[in-house]
Length: 316
Image (cartoon, rainbow, N blue to C red):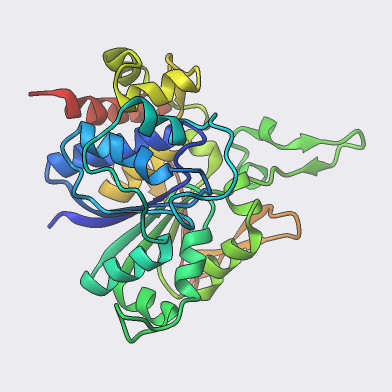
């Protein structure tokens, strides 16, 4: 049975979110997953309309989209591709407003079982979901709803190079030789929300850390195919990444759909802990429900698998 996935993304900033979305849409068309909905975790003006343009491009505009707050979210400068997509590629049926992210999450969870929550941005929406009260969609509070309906949470975030030795150059070495570990932005930038998700529910949680996708470059075939004249290729051209982008989010989406084999292996169970700066450290613990993913195959091989899946979207 195809996995049921909800994609929570900080779409509109970096273009790897758009490639992760294309990967998921390709898997939907292949029958490898069911994408129940998409929620935007970054406060970008008109971001729901931007996401919709890519859904419309690929004939999957029936997938519901939620925003971080309202669709018209705060001040804007017009520079984000998340905002510009809706202007450059007007799409019939694009929403003028979208439901608040955590409300859409509540509805989708109330209607479905065995859901995978995939997050490739700050955990703001998921934290608000966990802290939510019963509503018209469910008599369960957020914590209970998540624990009853979610099979796995998959998170792009954290950096564990100071433990694993993978890409140690990500960490800063002070003049006295002390290693200062990297605090990864998705989790460190919204630390309270991260702690709510990691410690607030007892759900299996897999972390695909920064160092996994950092040296894996994908997206060039998609960008070349569209040439900036399609919504998804425009995201790469806008970010000046026509030759490919680091695969933080696509690698995490790949895991969310297919699990560990053949591309990844998982750590033993344990607990991810945060210091006051948001630096993540993993502590093995047989009773823990966190695991850390690492690449099993060479990074180029995993990257080729991502690009091959994405390019399946454009086959007749």
